[in-house]
Length: 118
Image (cartoon, rainbow, N blue to C red):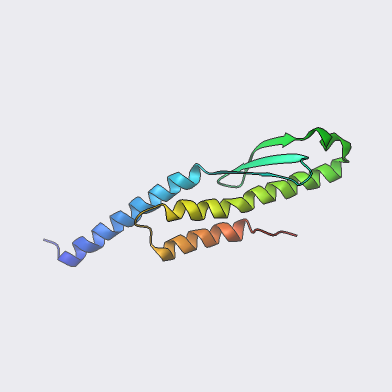
């Protein structure tokens, strides 16, 4: 026979696990895309920040390989930085996810993919 507090604790743990599983499914499906200001490169990244698509604009071949590489990397970082906002939106949509857990997960994404990189 269990005490009521044990039942409550188990119920809360199951709800937390379900909320985290829901968030994991939502985050896994995320994709972010960015295009540089000159339209030379468009990069799409998955939820892990890994590039899944790269489209070069017509004028991309007019740049040196080094210039184009820098544009592609900066555009990839811009796409990665968009992930934090998407994770935040996904986390807000998960019922039962407490604020502390939401903030911790979002903090990890922001640390991993900061908005400004120099």
